[in-house]
Length: 275
Image 1 (cartoon, rainbow, N blue to C red):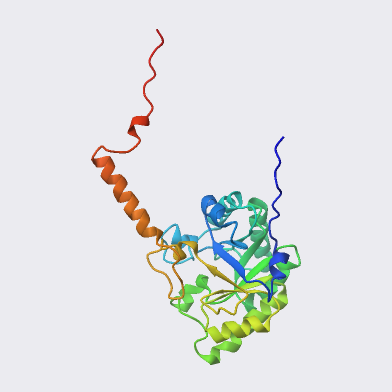
Image 2: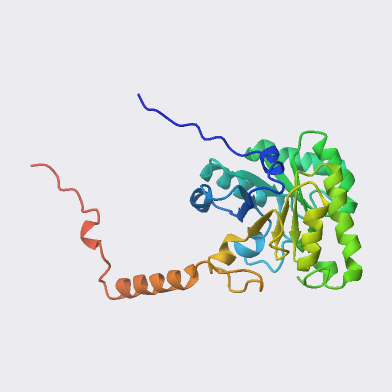
């Protein structure tokens, strides 16, 4: 008889209750194996639409499809046991109407089993955040730099450098908080603004290039592991796996070409017929 310990997965209300408490650890993941590795350390695993750039070499997140998000969300759910898994709604899947957003979010929750969705946009999306929250969809909001708007922003530049821009970004954060979001990602804003947002709203702020005063932090896993060819200035590299992988592949190729591939003595031999 085997004894299996039950691991309770964190929920959106658990994260919401962490406001002003122990900092919330958030990392992205798009695969079962990386989800398994980070699950014991991360409170939230974000299946971000950044997978378009990280996994597929796209120039932005705009081309990412809902099917891509669901496929990778399923993989992360299989690999994790403890962390709250949040899945991004990709560009074009929720902006048309609050009803479209609900249909999209419901499909993501049903087909992946994840615990919440993330949706870019501030005040303009507040009505949609409220509509989803009132119908059982936990929403993580996203303000500041919103990568899905790269075609109107022109570049992935920090927001709120000019103090005159602060009121609009602060209003965005307050709007989604008032509408029922359980947390909000604050991306690439001036440090004092990130601090002010955190102090002004009752839900946790998850900073990415925002402020150490945020209630939590999120990084793209490949960026912090040194797997991405370019990373934002605010990213600290905690590993250099890219160079290690390149060295390992070079050594493997050298062994194959010299016919000195280790383990070749353990290849399957043809079975001899019985006498």
